[in-house]
Length: 411
Image (cartoon, rainbow, N blue to C red; front, side):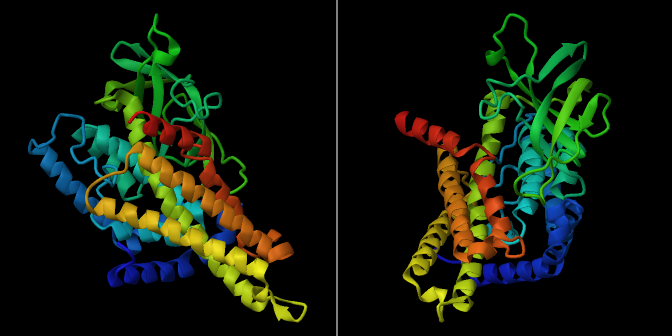
């Protein structure tokens, strides 16, 4: 794949028109936190029939599983490029909205991606038919908001080893305790996929089994914080979760499956990291567009700044970054169409390069705009703040390097 097809471009243009009508007028309210993003995301789903496509795909898969193809295994037999969410059929329909939304409000993509790819994706890969029907469909259609809770205040990048949240078996139930932080959608989540360690006396804490539960808002002992204040991604609410003796029945426990809860989380890291390339491309394309427009119209010493070689160098480097990241996105689209997901190392490589490229392009755009670039009315300021998050969430740059290097050294 070397370029978007005519059909892809029709989808892109339709999404752009919708964004111009529904997102840009609400950008200030999204940035201030006054307007949660979920109504806008639901509007996207309804406008383009994505909710109905999700229902149709879900129904077909449940019929297949109930007929015996995968029933009772607690495993998804189609762990393909869509992360088990059933959205891999039209790769452009999943990628193009991400790219276009990230030109305006990358936080919308974070809020949407966590609910679909991570929360719903985990349930679709690890849940029984009953669990999928109970929780997943509402997440896949965006009727309910999903959160994926793994990060803790004292663990950070050491997500598994440093995890302190626990599940203690009491009769037929589990009693959950612990806290999570930096949880996308946490303040508004209806359904939470919660990772914790089994309380196993005599076993070293770092070696204890990782369990995954599905929780509902309003459960006794579960507290969801107000949105945290952040540097960027203001259109994506982030919060903390506090669990004090939350009782969860076995019906809320997802199958550990092959590799246990750790493997489940790693599969989601692949989905999340590979998706960052599309997010980064949106930011890069918008920064380049705004920078070219500014270089053509802004004048100094009687000539447009685009005539200065230092400005031309900035623009040229932005274009190189755009081409490189676009090629990563095209490769990911081809993998989706072939029903193949990237390896963890491949996804980490995609994220590392794309995140750094987006952040560098956005910072250069601010520099090109000069003092105006530091002002919020010139949108490169917001995009620069948002782009920096790509180098932190879903694993920092440093963690991506570790995963890539380990893969290379293990060959």
